[in-house]
Length: 345
Image 1: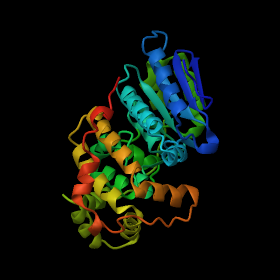
Image 2 (image 1 turned 180 degrees about the vertical axis):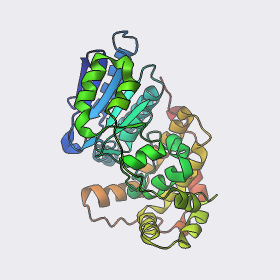
Image 3 (image 1 turned 120 degrees about the vertical axis):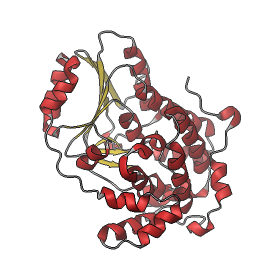
Image 4 (image 1 turned 60 degrees about the horizontal axis):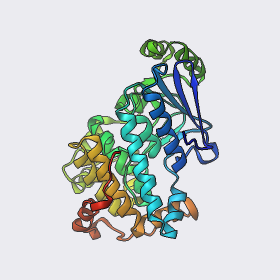
């Protein structure tokens, strides 16, 4: 079984236990990690001694997304076979986790973003802690919410998913629980004891999660305001509704939208609208098309430069305004890829 040096995979009692162990990179998922997780899951799928799988991360993060710097390097080198393989394997892993026949329990103890959301939110049990910080910030680097985001974000209540996908806003445990991104809350200091008890008696999963749980606190998101603003039938309707709002939330939201790549905003709004009516595999296929084509465009390179490499946080988007974004160009991003189309083998 191919195992990445950034993964710790073991049997713990009747659990399969996977630890993402790349803390210096906030457990960003590289290709080896993606393949290693998939291999472990496939080995345990038919192992009757493994009743459930637990995934966790070391350090400050569960997983802060995919390894965007490596992808950017491959892009600069023109290594499209590698890029296609990474994204195809990631999306296949997301699908495998969603359909896994045994409980997949993720300890969301820290930062959860992008690809880290895909391998956790699509599983059966998502355990938030007081350290949980969730975001889908892809629009800030000229990309779009992927890793299943086009499927799970539109299914959150009161257009919270649309708000998160368009603004890249970070939320904590209480809001994750309230919106359904997390299924349970357990204080971080109780996770080791919970893991030990799960290893002894994973069949008592629900009882143990309830026993170790505690209050997550009050949600901070104003869901009714989000619904009023982000429930519009078009991106322009959202912007018009936001223009009527006053106060700190409205100003922060306007700033977040202004900072995002205009093409990313239009593409993301469209994908979240369409994703609401797709099954997961069709949504991931749609995302694969967007990911490959948006990476080939100037905005992705510029976003990575501005936020991850030079870190000047001053990206020069092309086009620079929403008014300049051509609908036909955005529609073309999701056209079928022919022989390069994603499959789920």
